[in-house]
Length: 411
Image 1 (spheres, rainbow, N blue to C red):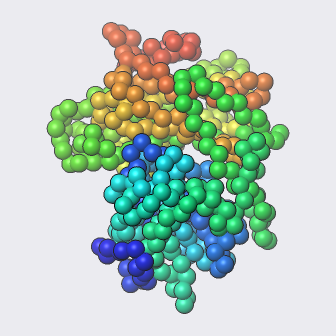
Image 2: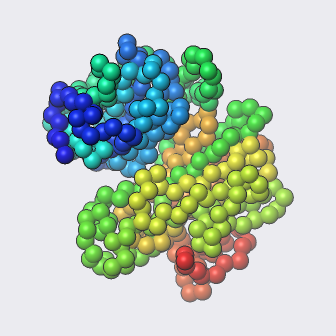
Image 3: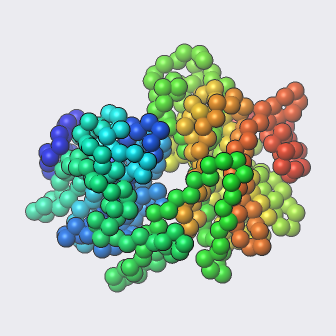
């Protein structure tokens, strides 16, 4: 492992990075929210193609040359330089906050594959709200890495302006990018992010066009590096979103949180999409809701995903998104869980799971069809089983879906 210091540069080939690799950012910021981004800029240092800004509202560039998975304080960018067009001369990795300054950062790092690392901390900065951490750039026909560590006075919007991008107003979210073979359209980037803070908070989203809402992604992610997680520390002591009761030996497999949903169609059909019972749903046919998979160990950096086919949203009456602690931690706060709802052309909606409740089940959010518009309501209500009543059944009864439940386990 090569340890870079501020200002140091090196060829990727000399680091043994000759193919696709990961760039992992671990930002230790405490309660301060920090957003990371990757700007793909041209030879003049400008974001001439907005599709190459990869961040929380746009998690991949064209051809997946750059993608990001956000997981609490850890952000993992997957980089395939061979897929970048010749017009992209540099990839710039940044972090920004609107709540404080970079002076508050703890011991943070950027790791290049498993070959190189660049450490930085709050003592390296003053009162800047952003930092340009590092960059990958072309020079004399080869790619190189540079550790920058330069503070930046403004936040994410100022970084966007610095690189020549244009921000969409919150009143008019940016339209979904349309790939074209010629020069891309000058889309404006939406930096807006909606956080539903209190139970009962609502947001209503209008359809962008007659095609509905497109591919809606509901993502559950959690922090695998908390000290409460024995899998992260190697400890085997006894002791969503996804969790129930920690097990003495099995916790070494990681936190297992499960995302699922109850749904009701406009024709009255009701059921659940979840890993328990292998009820995966379907995206291209009713119920137009599909659970992508079940991450048993928490090793998937992208967490767990439910996809809703928003082009058929007119056939969906309501969807109750929930998470369940299957095993690994004693309460929700120990997971640092977060659910994000991503709808094309709309701001990201975020719900955090930070309660110390030891109930295994959490009803997170309700997505409802109100006259063709999608309304999202924060629930964050916790349920535990009692006697013959399972946690699933208690939640069902609270929101009146009327399904039949029995206890079960994943195979």
